[in-house]
Every structure is written in C-alpha cells, then in structure tokens.
Image (cartoon, rainbow, N blue to C red):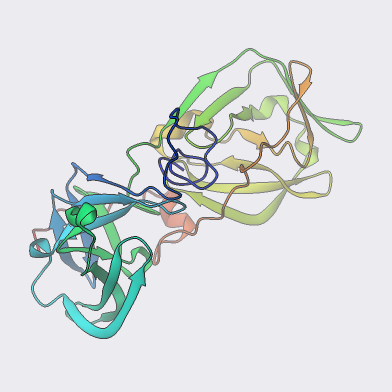
Amino acid sequence: MGLSWQQGPLAPGAVGRFLTDRPLPERLLFAEPARRRLRVRFDDTWIADSEEAILLHEPGHYPVAYFPIEHIGEGVLIPVDRTTTHRDLGVTRWFTVAGPDRRAGRAAWIHTDLPKHASVLARRVAFAWRTMDSFYEEDERILGHAADNYHRVDIRSSSRHLVVRAGEATVADTNAPVVLYESGFAPRWYVPRADIDPTALTATPTHTFCPYKGIAGYYSVAGIPDAAWFYRDAFPEAARIDDLVSFEPDKLDVFLDGKQLVLESGQTVVAHGVDRGLEPDEVRRGGRTDPGAGAGHP
C-alpha cells in the first residue's frame, strides 16, 4: 500500500512506471521527515518521543519510523551481541528494549555503517512494531504500521448497475453501489445490504485487519469460502462503507454495467495481523486511543 507496498511506485509490482529514458536502480529507498509527533510505549512507559522521526520506505515493506537516538529514554536500549547486514544500508546493530519490569530481545536496531547517500538515518533507531506495546501519533494510537503519507482512501457514491452472481443465482443487484479507491488497489465496489439476498451469505471465522479501515469480517457465498467481506464499525475515515458488503470478482461473477470484473494482477489481499495485545473487539471499541496516552515524555 502507499509508496512502497502492494503496487505503489517503489514496490516490486508497481502498476505505473517512471517516464524516463534512463534505467532506474532495481531498488529505490525513500526517506522523508514524518512531520508528526511519534511516540512509542513499552511496559507502560513512554520510551521514545519525537517530532523529528524519519520514515523509511523500502520496496515491499511498510514504512518504518526511525527516531533520533537522543529522543529515546535513558536505559531503554541494551546492546546485544548481534549484527546483520542490510542489503542497501549496511551493518545493522541490534538492541534489547528494556522497560521497568520487562524486556524485549532484538526489538530495536540502528544502521552503523551507512553509505554516504543514506546518512539521514545516522544515529537513528527503529523499533520492531510487534514487540512494542503501542505506537502513537500525538495522543492517538496507530495500528499496523507507521502511517504512510502516500496512502489514501476515497469513497464515492455511484448510480452504476452492479450485479453479483454465484452460478445461476443472483446474490446482489444494485443501482446504488459505493466505490472505494485505495492507494495500490483497483477500485472495490460495496453493496447496501438491502440489495443483497441475505440467504446467500454465511459468516465465516475469517478476519483481516486494515490500518486505514478497521477489522473486516467475511462471508462464504453459495458455499464458496470468504467470497465477500464487510467492515462493521469501520474507522471514522471509512465510515461510508460501514456494514456494506464487497464481493471477490475472482470467486464470484461480478458485473458492472454489464461488464464482468476480474481480479487484477497483484491485488491479492495480504493478511495483516492486529497489533500485539490488541484484539479485534478492542479495535472495534476504539482501541486506537489509550487512557494513559496523555502522559509525559520518556
């Protein structure tokens, strides 16, 4: 998603191209100021707090926030006898992260032998997302990964004719679909439940998580597993698709104004787990905020 993930311009499967007559490097990394106050919480303690974090966009990866080492709490980073080599950024030194009563091994890293062109990351530390308790922008918890400045979701109403069939059976027929445009994805069409045959839908235990939309639940349709999905209690920025249903065009026959839709190359959804310590029900209840979020600097 966004700049370097899914089919973004720096991703391995980019759907677009740079218009240049010169060959580009096989891999392009992009670093930029986050321009947001980012904070990290571990063991009920704020361990990092900075308005000067750098976001690194690496092909095929979510953005990673790098914090100035002086903006990390005293005693938080404990060196360990482990180094690795990043293919673009050189030697990487690893740390255990220590809180008052708990430690997380190999949970932070710093690149110690950066090439000159990557010096913007010098003396900056990144934290393994899942080993930390939580990450925040100001007083609001963010989920999944650091926010990608180039990822956006636009939702539009439509009067086009959308029909969904499973074999000979019509599952949905609407002239009021809602289309969701999301960075890195082809348009996704959502259908009001009033225009769906409810007997065709059977809930499955599958759930996936989107940092921009929330928790998705799934339905089997006419015995086809996970052929449709929906967001119940979608995040506010995606509220217009709340409890609408979208159908997979590679599993069902989906027609838009008489033209059959197909799943475009590179559009398979990659399962994205919810943050450590945060269950789906907590996300639905507003788990992006925390009662202690207003506490002070580390």
